[in-house]
Image (cartoon, rainbow, N blue to C red; front, top):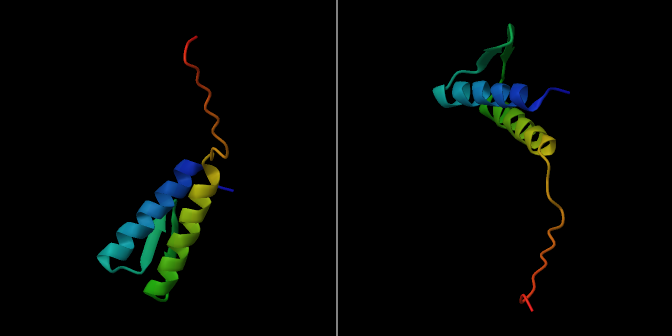
Length: 69
């Protein structure tokens, strides 16, 4: 699996191409051509899920306080 920096770079390249209306993306010496905008959107969704999965999530937050007595 790719690291966070690489996933982010791939996502940024794909987003830039999508916003420019280009269906071919080049990164790391590789070229990918997407058939439709929906296919690009699916790839972006997958990249975003992978990026979200690599970041740590805090599941429980416990707060302790006192009145200082």
